[in-house]
Image: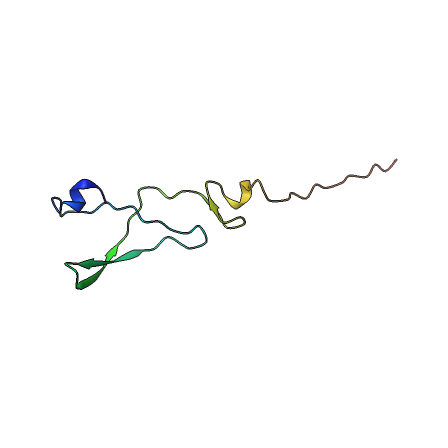
Length: 81
């Protein structure tokens, strides 16, 4: 959490860092426990979503730009006319 969220000094929104596995989708909501006993689902908004490659399961690039993806090169055969 940022310092204002942790100190409960800003109630209009909370800013937290949530670790997400690259093989999972980003959640639309996050369960939060308030005062140790009340559980609420808080809607999640993202100011930015990193590119994610489902081929090698990492953040930082897309499937189309995956360095581990084998590209099929077409072989052209010369045929005399």
